[in-house]
Length: 171
Figure 1 (cartoon, rainbow, N blue to C red):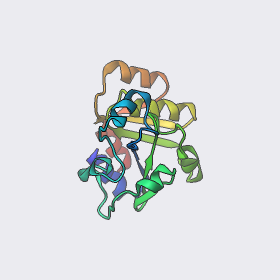
Figure 2: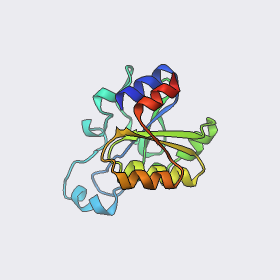
Figure 3: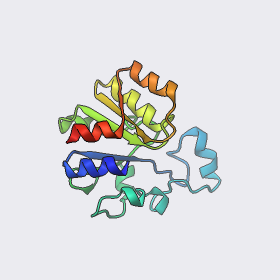
Figure 4: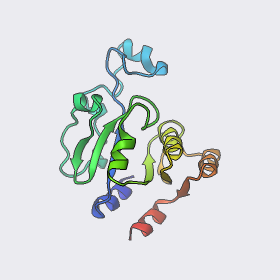
């Protein structure tokens, strides 16, 4: 993921980091985690280190995230052509302004890397596909990728490739 980010940053391509924030009262948490949060679990708690971008992925001018603004649906700039957005559920398009944000910038192709393929990236790629974005999955820059999932992505028109192919395309 770090190599992909570095290449995108040097090429001035837009980058959007998608995060979760779980309010301690559980009001914005999905059902499968709500009870744990309500009982005191601190998972992606706003204004905590666990809700920040991983240190190795942060742009050089990174400042702490503004949880209130993100929870209100705003995109926070963290670099030139680089933003962070909050999503309340698995998919990045569910109850967010992501589609409008992308369309206003003329972005029609989304390249996905990230954590936990079976949940968030997979759901977001399905949502992007059903909105007629071109979708690229960088399989070796994503955790928990499995063969059947890769085939399912290909079946809906996702271009599945390696980081080396992305880097070659950028060059």
